[in-house]
Image 1 (cartoon, rainbow, N blue to C red):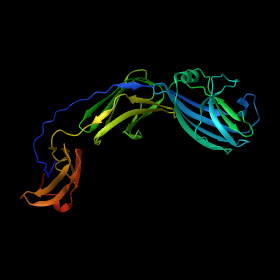
Image 2 (image 1 turned 120 degrees about the horizontal axis):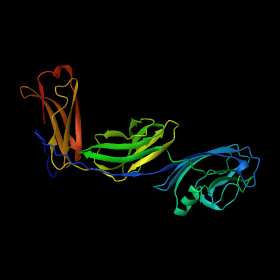
Image 3 (image 1 turned 60 degrees about the vertical axis):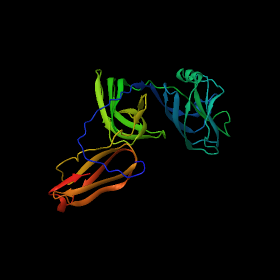
Image 4 (image 1 turned 90 degrees about the vertical axis):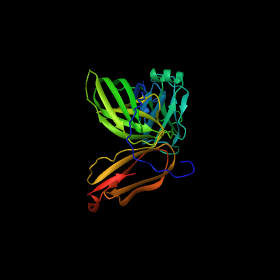
Length: 324
């Protein structure tokens, strides 16, 4: 509110629903789970060291993500790299360096992700990239593994849309086939690019026919958001399906106050109200004689969609009505 406080008045609100539809952008997610050994080096060595590299490649974002665990090396680590192009049994130059890889150790963990160039993607999909961990005992590489991608994860989406009403978002998606599908984590991110799980929807499991799913994300603050589904199979493998466009939760265009619900209530009730501008909001509780018996809210609120919860005590359960 510009230079003075405004109160919200009760009135009958006729709702006009605007449906905003967003379309889908689907990725093929290629998982991999591979084991390092000295026997895979060229030439082979007898190092007792071992390790694993677990990750995924997204063919839409071109992001290669992975986590490396290694132990039992005979030498201290000097560096780690992706090398290529080279098939199994052939050496090749460095393709991508592991920035920040732990050095001077014989065991450790490292995680990173890279956006691949078109040429790097071509080499990866052809199986011509290998990961190499170098030590002071084996400068050319103590343990190595070829990066061979598994087949894309086995759920096919035919649609993924969203419907926006005020500050509530309903996601709808349809699978055309499912194989070993445990379910979907629903994830949301804001401008920080940090993904947060907001719900889970169980999958059908196995199906060759279309199946429809829905999830509602309610009471979201004003802002710009992205959504994605993390589909996981019963073996723990997963893939992502991204909603291609942003979800925008704006601010209301008019002041409004909803009837409290549930009504009658025992022991609590909720009131929703909309503010097109920042301001002071006052919501009070009156008995049937018009006497004010409680103040539910009297504070500054930002523009947007809000609600207040009222927990009633025994002495106030009779002969009350709410007025804002």
